[in-house]
Amino acid sequence: MRKITVSNIAMSFSTLLCLMCIACERKATTAQEPRAEYSAPKASQDRIPPKPTIEIESSLSKDTRSSWKALVTQLPGRQTLDHIHFLEETHGWVASKDAVYQTSDGGKSWQPLRIDLPPNSAIANMFFISPRLGWVVVQKRASVSKYDENHTWLFQTTDGGQSWRLQREDKASVVARVVFVNEQDGWLIGHRYIGLVPLRFNLLILRTSDQGRSWTDVSAELNRIATDDTGMVNDELVDMLQEGPVAAVILTSRGKIFKTSNYGQSWSKVAFIPGEPESTCICRLGIGEDEQFWLAGGAYENGKGMWGMLAVEQPNLWKRYRLGNAHFKDALVFSKSHAVTCGPIPLDKEDTADDQRLGVILHSADGGRLWTVLYLNKQIKTINALSAADPNSIWAVGEDGLIVHLVSAQLN
Image (cartoon, rainbow, N blue to C red; front, side, top):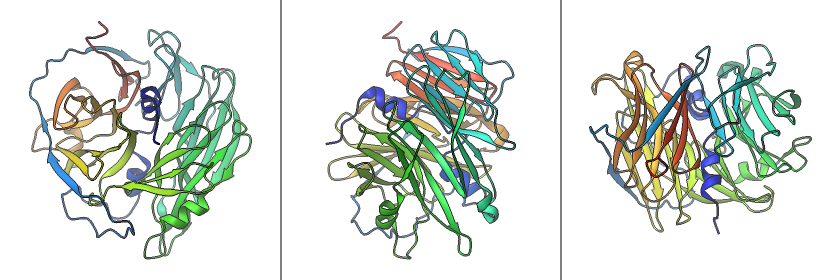
C-alpha cells in the first residue's frame, strides 16, 4: 500500500534542485537542444502497456486577487536561491550555488552556514533530518564529452552547520537528490555515465543505514529492469519519496516510477506516463490522498516556448493537465483540489525570451484545470523551488535572494 503523510510529501519537494531538474541540466549540455515545441514523442519502448491518458488544456485566470498573504524577504547579496527545505514551520534552510542559510524563528531572520566548497563546484541538493543533522550534495559539472570529469561530494553536519565533514566522493556521476528517512537510513539518487560513443548513462541509487558513513550501490537490479529494447538505459533518477526505512518510490526523467520494499535489493515498475514530449522535464513526484501518483514538470527554451504539466494518476488512466506559457519548475499537491506550482511565465503571451519572464507562484483549487496567481514578481525571471510543512503555509525561493512565505487566509 502506498502510504505517506502530507508533511512527508511536502518535504520531498522542498529542497532542492531547482534552477532545473537534473534531466533538464543534462539536456542543456548537449550539442543540439530539443525544441520546446509540441511534437509527437518517440514511440515508447516500454514492455508494460501504458494506461490511457486524458489530455486536458489548463487555463490561467487573469484575476490576481488572492486570499493568501505573501511575506517577502531578500537575503543580503541577493544571490539566486535554488533550494529550500523546511523541517517544520520554525526550522528551514535555503541555498544558492555556494551558500546555505538557516532560520530557527520561522523566517524572521536567516543566518549563513559556513561551508567550504571545492573549486568550481556548486550546491546541488540538501536535506536536514533535524536542526543539527543534515547533508549537502556538491557537484562539479562537466560537458557531456568530458563526462568523466563530473565530480560529486557529499558533506554532513552534526552541529547545525557549524562544521562539515566529507562523507562520499564520486566521479562520472551526477547526484540529483539526497533523502533521509531517519537519522540512520538514507538514499542518494541520480545517474552515472558509462560511455561516450554512443553516450550511455545508467540510473544511480545508493543507500546507507549508518548515517552516511558507508553507502551500498543498489543500482544493478534497477538498471536491469529499466533497460530498453536497444539494450541501454539512458535515463536518470530525479525524485524520490521515502516510505519508511526499507521502502522507497523513485521517478526517472522519462516519467517511469519504480518501487522497492527491501532496501533496493529488488525493484518493480509500478507506473509510468507515456506520450510526453522529450523536452519536458518531468521532475516532481508525489502521492495523493487517494494513494495515486502525481507528476509535475515543464519545458522552457529561450524564444521557443514553454509549458507546465501536471499529471494525476487514476485507477485506470492518467489525467494530464497542460498549461501553456508557464513552466512548472517545482510543485506541491496536497489534495485532489489543492496544488501549487512555481516558475516563470512570459511578460507577453507571444514572447518567451529570457529577459521577458516573470517569477510566479500559481495555485489550482480544482486539481490543475484552472490556475490563479498567488504571487507575481516582475523584478525577477523565475521562482525556483517550493517547500511546505503545512498545506496552508508555503515557502518559495527565487532569484535576487528572494524568499516568499505564503500564508492561507485560514491561518490569518
